[in-house]
Image (cartoon, rainbow, N blue to C red; front, side):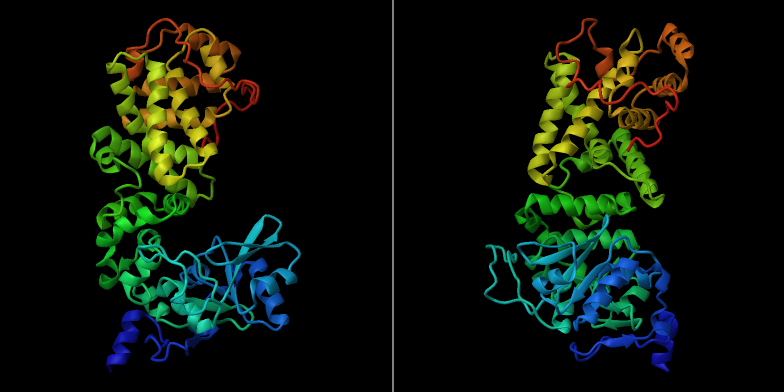
Length: 467
């Protein structure tokens, strides 16, 4: 009777208990797991079939299986196999072995990239580790059940064979999916110490999926948060980018704060989100990003980080002007300070940092609505991103909405219409930097000129995809 009651609560007839023997998984057939085969990538099926026909075991694994069980089409498909990286590489025309900590194979079909990993074995005590216990390199191969133990969360430790349409569940992942629980495999403290990035992953998955974190998994997170400082900045940046592009960016940041993980990742984020204008601006930017992700539109990391860090720039911009610096040089100095502090923590790529600078540097230029200045700004290759950023500032109440409306009209107008708009007296700018702007042009008023990469938009002047 108790078992019947549990099955009713979980909403399924499948056995939900984790196997007593971790080497023997619960095997679920098509009617039990309910995966829609139409959601499975044709290239993922092609890779598993090729490996299986060569005599190897091969399964779709990890987040793709989790998403399929949730009836969500996965963005990425990872494959796990007992073939070694060299054996995998020989089976595919475009295959590349990468990775130092653990070797994997990237198999390419056009622009579609699939990641193929060899089953990992039990972690060796002799594996190189840093002084905090983080595993630096571990290329130990093993059996499928050992690979399942090495995965981070129960919901990510299931294997799907598209040929047989069976799911192999080693650690009660089906049960946790149906109860919406995020649970780490093994002893949480040991698993977090082994790879501190899991501290960020647990937050991302909980926020993205709307799952609750198992109490035992959540307990050590705040205490072990400083371990993230020992992770290479590039890995932290990659994980933060996944978090912010998850489609639940705001929920992820709120979860980061809740778990005590935000300190050091985006310095002063708490201060920004506690300021009325800063909080509204960040929320609008993240909401816009989430909507774009849900709509399947691309999101520029440069635009996203420019939005998150804008009010740190504004704070330093104001301080430099109070110290006697002219507005435009002050803005560049403020941008330098913020980017320098963030690059150390998040390993911001040069292209992303350059986009952020362009977006920030354009903002005072939107205030100049006389003469040839607006026409010159139309030629900027990052105009669309700068314009979208301007509209966020208007919507948040940071500057007058009239400025954004004027630019919307100016970009939509033809030649005569633009001249008519220029003839009107612009509204009084509310930007604190603009109020102090001297009449003379500062020698540093312009960032690097970029007027030859994009002509004035006349046929379709309004930005369609600024991010």
